[in-house]
Image (cartoon, rainbow, N blue to C red; front, side):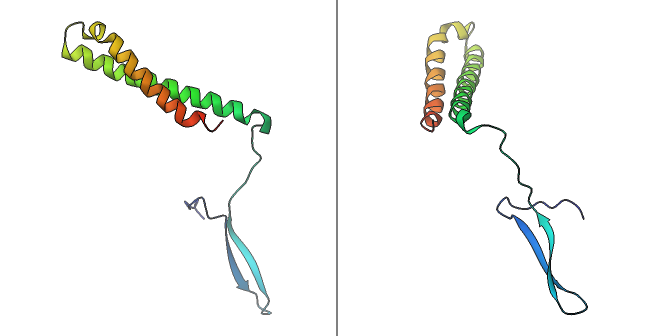
Length: 105
């Protein structure tokens, strides 16, 4: 049987089959594999914090690069003229992105 693509909420598929004597027995067709968590419980808050900071930095950098290119297209040496404004706006977006996830820690 090919690999099934099922929703994550589906944990198993069981078919009830009757054998020749009439006894009904379950036949498991699909069972979602579980696994041990790879991280320790004590380090989860630090992992969440690190991921939130990385996400914030990614939002900041992406926003700044987009604004930098746009400033350069608009005017000659536009990135220098708009440097302060671009940095402030991208930092605001990065901090906002980080503050949305930092409350989870």
